[in-house]
Amino acid sequence: MQGHPVSYSRSTIIELMIPAYTNFGGKVHGGTLMSMMDKLAYVCASKHAGNYCVTVSVDAVEFLQPVEVGEVVSLLGSVNYVGSKSLVVGIKVVAENIHTGAHRHTNTCYFTMVAKDAKGETAMVPPLILETEEDVRRYCAALQRKRLRDHARNYMNDYRENFAVDADVQQFLEKQRCVVALEIEES
Image 1: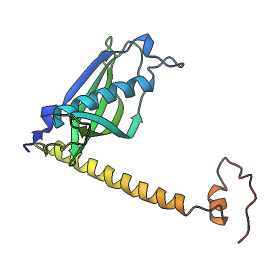
Image 2 (image 1 turned 90 degrees about the horizontal axis):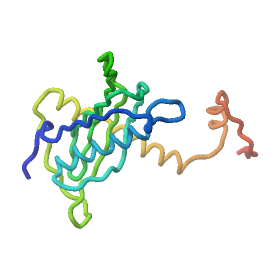
Image 3 (image 1 turned 120 degrees about the vertical axis):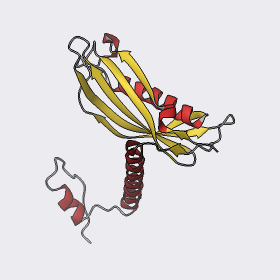
Image 4 (image 1 turned 30 degrees about the horizontal axis):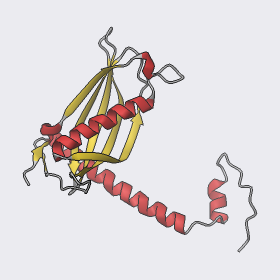
């Protein structure tokens, strides 16, 4: 299976932010931006994979600054990592004030996508050809996020299976803004 360079599937969506996109605070709704990011992740992943792709997780969603009505938003996406059947697409959102020309980096996130064949089964993904130092950095960063996510998942599964409200938990919660209102048996 022949691979594709990162540049092959790099894509951009540009859209004017209109009043219908606002939340109750008058800013562009985060869900609107997430929907746009999901569409771009689909475009990048499907182009690289040559197949339909579905979102399986979204990591490190960061809303750095609010987006205003009237700004032009550019969503920049690229495939940063591929596994055998999955891809990670990095998305950067930049808002531009068209009156002043000022640009602001407002959002970043990473979509993990899985390729599907015509029967709906997972499909192999072509290798990713890394042509620049930035391509290599993004690939390595995606691997690190994957390792951290796997470690956190294993840790939380173990934590859930072995959890007990005991003296350690009480001490852990001591300075938190909660009240444990249950009888705790002394062991």
